[in-house]
Image (tube, rainbow, N blue to C red; front, side, top):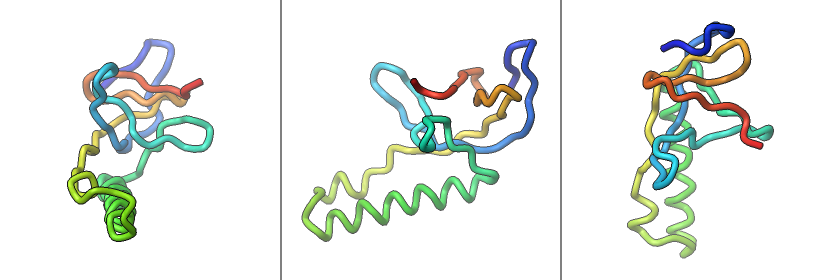
Length: 100
């Protein structure tokens, strides 16, 4: 994984992705400032996905979501590097920044 020549990798991590119809694979979890959330370990990212599932299961129990929707997992974990600019680059070279 490599980014633009003027930037360099600062650290490695993991992001949660989802496949979208028009954008293809994209970061599914962003922070309050719209930067991709990067987890230190794959397990931490997986545990975040489990939290999503628990929320969906509770919404099903509360009658706010269908069972099929509650049990469908579309998110997945992808290894990434974070450049000194804050840009996240995945193993396919896709770059994700802050969404404006």
